[in-house]
Length: 157
Image (tube, rainbow, N blue to C red; front, top):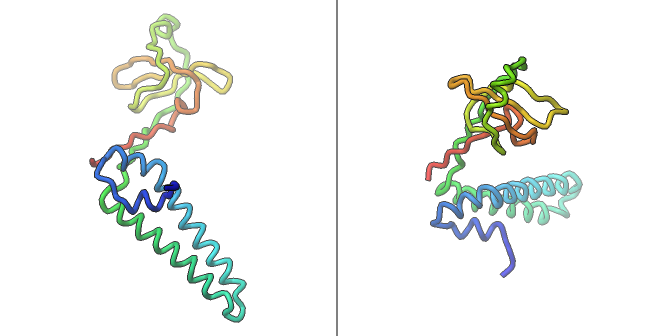
């Protein structure tokens, strides 16, 4: 059987890890298909001068309705996660070199609000300070470590 995003959603799973995977990969695909079907229906309708293309418009609207129904049924059982965006501050300042040398190195930054203390576009390392504990963290200057780009998803299941 060939892969079908709508069939994956219609066969509502009982496994939370599968549902989370569907949220990451299948739900966006279904949303894109709904938008595309509605866009095509609207485009055909704008060229439908004397009603010759009404069946085509109806076909695309029906497809969008069927996809929406499948998505709504899936979301009724497996709702979207709560997304909290971690808000960081950027306050570049000179730090004590001895303190910087003791900074904890990690591939990714902790998932708590931090203050970026040093690092720029050319720097290979970003230094973050936890304003609550005062701890310094040294992380690679990668997109996922940039300030104000981290989201924490909390699933209800």
